[in-house]
Image (spheres, rainbow, N blue to C red):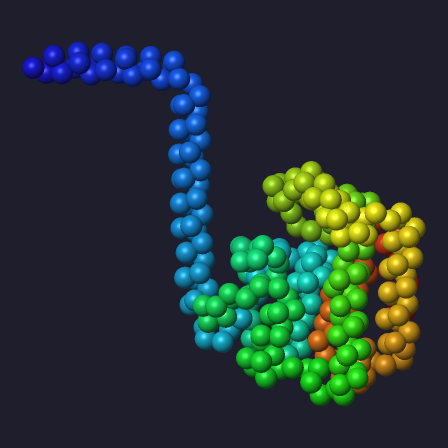
Length: 275
């Protein structure tokens, strides 16, 4: 009986192997599907474990998620720098975590607070201002609040794109690589993928259609406006800092300490030293 069973198994194995060899495409597809399913299961498991760990950090403790720490600045993202500066300025208890830098909207930074996930640095700041009564701009007259909002938008919607043009299109990630602590995969993304992705995005946005000198002039005007309005004041809106100063520090830190090559951003950085 055992001999018959062994012979049957051998025959079945031989027939099965021949069947597989005759259908290489189906085999490759099945293996690929199995690999994808396994990867997704592992990703989901790791995601659950991270959230369980964050939930144990404590009530009303903000978990700030962002890219890994930089070499010359706490972070190479002006948005992460902006939000972390606000947390420190508003004296909101937080911990930094870089194990999942991209949030539910595919952006960095984002936060976890009491199990709730909030993305986009500006929306996070507005959420925390209401949650902890830390609206630092509310003390200003309405006219000055409008000015602060305009400067904030100028930096996040205009200077941002100029910085991206330089970092990814002109410099092709070289300075970012030197300023970051990147693993091999992230370094590959910076060098091989991000320049192409950002070049397309800057073209769609519009700033990528301009020449290098034209972009430089746009950024010069922005920086001049900030410099002239700041004047001799300790902070942009007066004697006390507010949210727009967090944004300003996020960008000036990148330009002052995140530029390692002598290109147009180096010239911009010398101008911004005046701020």
